[in-house]
Image (cartoon, rainbow, N blue to C red; front, side, top):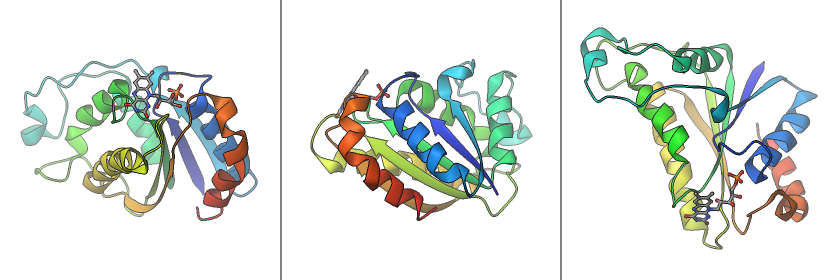
Length: 179
Ligand SMILES: Cc1cc2nc3c(=O)[nH]c(=O)nc-3n(C[C@H](O)[C@H](O)[C@H](O)COP(=O)(O)O)c2cc1C
């Protein structure tokens, strides 16, 4: 089984990247794991033109196609997102917007192969879990419209830098057992 673990943060060495590494190391024994960082991809914002509502194609062709190909290759997608102003980072939100050709609310639309499972991990510096749940909600809303089954989530509060994750490593490993 193929697993794609995505760092939804543009920071390649931060706490989100560390969680991606822990998850990837933990699942590599069982699955074929690939990691990606949203900042590895260059793409433009959605123009809101709605051409894709009638053509199922975007008028722009850039790295969104490459990242969506990684989604297509995977059986399991795990999105790991920090809170940036109480939501996913803008780079990841821009990617979600550009996935409108795959959104199941209009016909025609592109489709991913069915049967994919999706997981969400959210982290933040503040102490309140509600903000993590909001981010998980954003990711699960995205999965829902791609018809990726939402199978589990984890929220981690009081995390700013990767060192803050040291006492939380077991919690992340336990979450991996559910994947
Ligand atoms: C631009 C920006 C906005 C942030 N906004 C919030 C926020 O609204 N709430 C919060 O708890 N943490 C916020 N944080 C802190 C991050 O969620 C936290 O440091 C996380 O561990 C960052 O992971 P990263 O360095 O891997 O991107 C923000 C960080 C940045 C850079």
